[in-house]
Length: 343
Ligand SMILES: [Zn+2]
Image: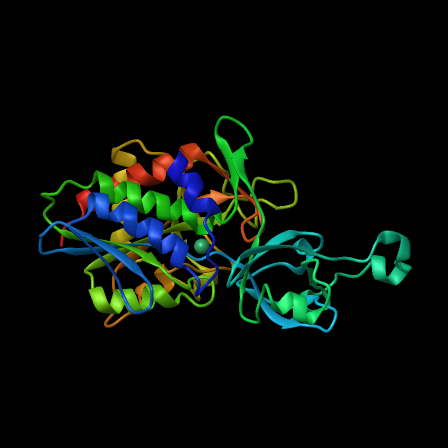
């Protein structure tokens, strides 16, 4: 479990995936015939020599912030990288990855004692907030951080129960972990060529998967990502039926059809493989939100693509929750589906 923890705690907002890429490269080298990093930063491990080309994708980037401006007093304003609800930002602890190392910071807020009634009722927008790094002034702040530095949510990793795990960046580091485990399980003599791709910049437009799919030009692709569990008090059954612990979700459509509409053949492959091997699964129709699959399936002349998602609570916040059982089932299902695939 150390590897999973290492992946979740590694820092890498979109475009800054280097630390995660290092881990992926190191681990893929243990199981693959060939590992390389393309000009975009995607890490690809290749295994097998068969004719059928299968691509598996998991994204390395996490949502976070980026330094936009440092004011005269040394306080920092920022932009959001990826979809983040402004309401979760207040009073968060963050880490700014400066040139000389990580600089701790706090997203500051006005104490309730000083707030007028109308202020207590309104959501503070991210552009009204600031990061305090304890700098004396602008010059002092600029000696540690610069405009354009990545800002990571300070978070931890641990267990809520025997099965439920909380962590930072579980979207999609648990997918990266699954990818590594699947590549490890695939036998060297598989009658296919499998490309395990850890992609970049998914959270800001599914970009890395697009260039990787073009380069590999696979016969089919599977993306492994996280999805929204609907088993918490605020979410209605009509919004999400998924429950953590009930198995990975096989996607039918993303973003009400604006994202991936999964290929019937790949969808059947996943469903039939799950049934045959008695692996629990759920079916996911997503109202909003997309995965790498949405870009891969429109690459070149169209690539038959499916998505397997691990239901998570509180994604796109500093701390998400998932079930270890679901992660294990995802690895089994993905591995078995790869082995079952025929051209
Ligand atoms: Zn994701």
